[in-house]
Amino acid sequence: MRTSIIINNYNYARFLGQAVDSALNQTHPDIEVVVVDDGSEDDSLKILESYGNRIKLIAKKNGGQASCYSAGFSQCSGELVLFLDADDYLRHECIERVLRHWTPRVSKVHFYLAVVDADAKPLWRVVPAGRLVDEEALKMMRLFGCYSTPPASGNVFSSAFLKKILPIRNERELIYGADTIPIFAAPYFGQIISVRETLGFYRRHINAGTYFDPKWVLASLRSEHDRDMIRDRAWRINSQSFANAAYHLLDPSRAKRSVCYLKLSGGTGIVENDTCLSLLNRSVNGIWHWSGYTFRQKLIVTIWFILVTFLPMLLAKPLIKVALGLGERTRWQHRLWNETLAQERSL
Image (cartoon, rainbow, N blue to C red; front, side, top):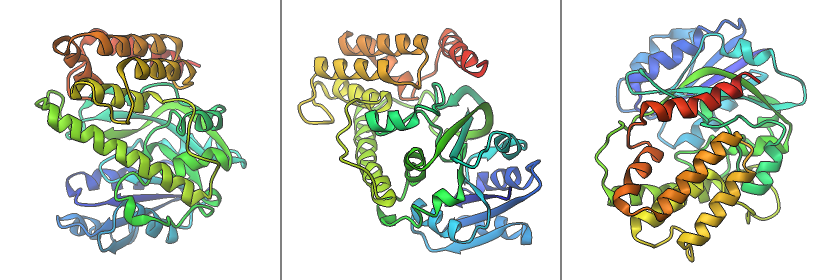
């Protein structure tokens, strides 16, 4: 099956070559590489032009990630499509491994991404941090409005499915986060298949140990919450979906941000009427319904929520830093969490 790898780039010249090379060097023989440059002001175009006719280059004015998805998809010819961020890259056998699992009724296959730093050094984490969800993806969408899935570079979509939701209608709202549209719509249009292998690399740009400024963290948490609301509305608009957006449960990622915000703000919730006890109750309830965690992970995360809620700020702060990726995990934390992932991959 022909597979199109669509790379969206904006000012990532430093990483772009690694992304393009990883797409071109796939072991699967029928690969089309489409690169959409979103008005970069660095050396990106010079790098892309050096590939000649090995890639299909679309150079456009800056319009954001959603416009790149629409532009790239309109020019691709693959039966399958992977949207690769320009700062991420794939293992050479990625598409070959995915195709072993593909069936006609599938809308999406996803896999783990190993987290690396700006220099491609391993950070000993994977995304998603918990179990990949397949059969329960639609149930999770109806309960939480999301499910355990990697970001853009860890998903391969059916082109037939994408034709039902692309081009993206509200492109200007989605400068970032356009990957949530096909990811969250996919369970409504077909089966989700999990490949429990690490087939790509996700680059994390914030250095662990970054200075912890509560005002900056609060602003960042608020911004991410606002983007969540935009993304939720966007995938519904583009997939012409589905009932109302009042989910029954709070997913772990949003719960983590809400609890951190409440703690750092001194009691002001990111959502009106949030209180420490009500938020703790909703968070723990959501964790135990979340299919993306093993039993052991649910225990670990529950303990984290309880400690952050009740400990004084001096003691809660290190837990918040680690959870937000602003602090180093200790060796025993890596071992504890990675053991649960090893159990998942052995299934």
